Structure formats: structure tokens, C-alpha cells
Amino acid sequence: MIDDRWGTREGVGLHCLVQQGSADRVPLVYVPGSLGRAEEFRAEMGRLAPRATLAVDKRGVVEGESAPEVGYAFEDRVADLEAVVADAALGPACVMAFSLGVPVAIRYAARHPGLVRGLILLDHPARYPARDGAWLERAIPFARERGIPELRLEVFEDAGHEVFRPDYERFMRVIEGFLQDLDAR
Image (cartoon, rainbow, N blue to C red; front, side, top):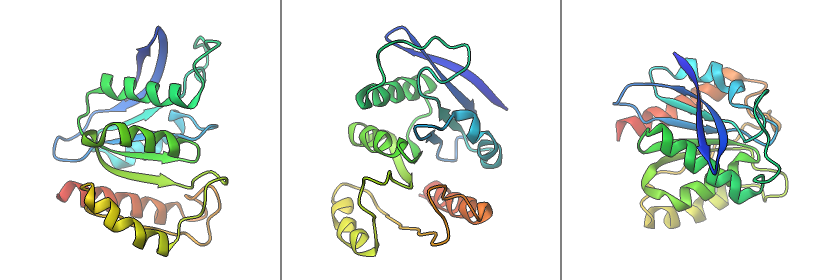
């Protein structure tokens, strides 16, 4: 069952969707892009059951929620994610982010390496350089020095910014396979 939950940071209500799960599976935290919502990840949460999942909304995007006049900068978004994840008490998790959620997830992982078992980064914003096989080869030794055992680059040549189109099943198989590999460790 997927529940609506509210955390708070500095008096601001922060909405998320939470699905409890099996303790033998690595939980997944989803960070949507600038135009995305936690609700849009509901189907994936159901498919990933019995894995615990948390999908985090940005402040001010849920209908009926008060939208404070401040607190929308990058560092605020990271701090909001930190607050919601701490409230959920999932333990070490894989963090999956889409679009402008990617830099938020990266900053969160850099601040909390002990709480991040894996990162799934979906389609960086256009202003960031493209990552190719050469980048991955340079990144592997750096990552291993920091205790990250495995990096993978998946390129969906026929996909645009919405990497789950045109082949949603392929997208979900790759995500599920990565999570199952984390579970096995």
C-alpha cells in the first residue's frame, strides 16, 4: 500500500509517497525533476513492491499545500530531501533521480555516503556534459577509491529526455536489474 505522508523542515510541510517493504531489499528513494511529482511515480512504486519506496515532492507543488515565499533554491531542495528521507527512516537506500532532480540526488549522496547504496541518475539537464563510455572508464577508479563497487552506463539511443519512452518495459527491466544487484550484495 502506498501512503501519503508529510514531513516538515523549518515549519514547511513536505509531501511524499511511502510504500513499506521487505527488509531484505534495498529501499528506493525517487527524486523527480523540476516539473515532476511524486504521484507520477506511483505505478513504478507498485511494480517495485515489495521493495520499500519513497517518492519525494518538491515544496509547494501539492494542491492545497501552503507555498512559502522562500526556500526554493538548490540547497533548500537538498535540505528538504534530507528531512523527508530522515523522517522515513528507511536506512541506506538507492536514490533514483530524474532531470533536475539529478544534482539534488548527487549532493545528497555526497553529504550522506553511508545512507546511499546506489544512484540511478536519469537524463541530466541539457547544460551538463553528456556522459559516454570514456567518462565511465575514468570514473570507475575514482568511484572504487570511495567504496562504490559498480558503475554502469545505460544508453537508450532511441530515447529523448523522457528515458522511459519509447520502451517503458526496457527502462523498468534495467532499473529492476540494478536494484536486484544491490539486493544481492
